Amino acid sequence: MTTSADTAVNAVLEIFSWVGLGLGGVVLLVGVILALADGTWEPVTVMIDDDEEGGRIARWFGSDGEIGQAHLTPEQLTALEGQDSASAFARRGYSGRMRLTRGWPVVRFVAWFGVGLTGLGFLSLVVSWILLFTAG
Image 1 (cartoon, rainbow, N blue to C red):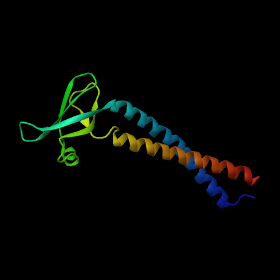
Image 2 (cartoon, rainbow, N blue to C red):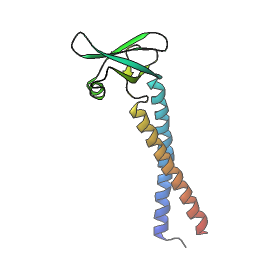
Image 3 (cartoon, helix red, strand yellow):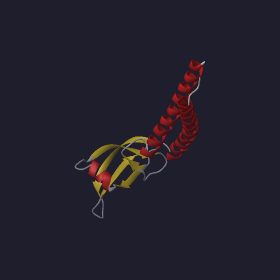
Image 4 (tube, one colour):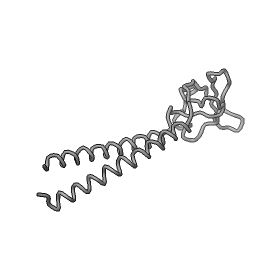
């Protein structure tokens, strides 16, 4: 015999499975598009020096032999304070793009959010099936 509580639980699980799988798939697709748009970043060793305006500038050799340089942002200045050289990542094909992390944090967040939603949807689907088959 099915009670109203069973019906409510089944409805909630159904909603979670549809939203989790559907929205999770879309978010994962957005994550893939963002990762492709982010491009390829290669590890480089940067040399940090003063520039003409009194700021700090990072210079490096790319894998193609081209010399790259970029002015350090305030966040990079804080992270690299007191260092003359550091490990960083340069955008392949662009001589003026450098960052301290390999991946873009937004891509990482979107990917994990999509994995979480898809996992919620899959878990809700499995629990819904278990309840369906155990109810008789």
